[in-house]
Image (cartoon, rainbow, N blue to C red; front, side, top):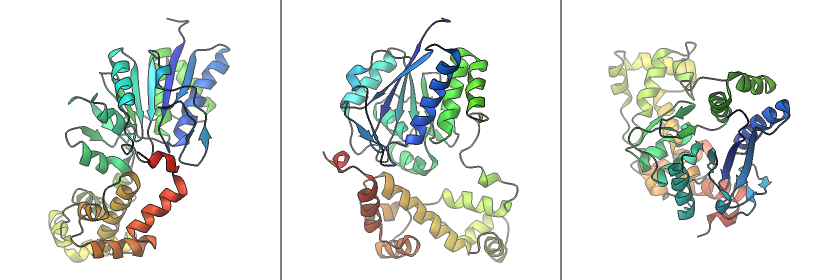
Length: 327
């Protein structure tokens, strides 16, 4: 076991976050460099073996297509900005076969959507994805348990990283499990990084002692009532305070009323759906709790200076390779 070379096949999806890939590459490279031999090896895989573009516009050359996957120790699926818009039955089949052959499968960011589409997630599996896409994930897969931890590890060989730096946290944990703490510590020190536990939450501002606790609790209630908004005076009643007190606290901390904060929260929720999904504008408006499209469009434009349709068209023209949007 000591001389075993561990293999990682990294499947890249269109418009994937390059920062996650680089963190994986560096973690594996550093160990090989320090130990003066190959302990970890990896291949970059795309569905069709063609080069692929990351979300920052950089193009990456693939080492092979899905057929190049030959029972690796780990498969890492790094999702992109449109996780389920171009589904690949071949990819889903590859993931199912690899899982059956006991390859560990790691989903990074929206890679969780692809694992869900492949049918590998059971009722015991705990999933995480980037907090921006959590609501979208729940809309599509309401029966799957999802948390806001930075990463999760399941007994069935499925692991999930929320994206960004959490990718490094999970990779370091994997390396610690297969090679020992000395190896993972060595990488972390080289990257000047202190690994975080999987219990760490993606967003900790909700429980920041420097932020008014009443506002934190109010926002939690708002976030749980996006599609069917709750009245602000009802939120105040739930918290056993007066409406005036709640308004005063929001003005002090956020320089706006709780009503405006709530609307902005729902608009941001809609923005994420525009970014990661292909739903119709009217459907997104309804999911974000707006009864009238005109109110949604006007509210959205006040924040982003574009209508929802203009916003969607703008960022796709700016970021996306048109080839990935075709059938």
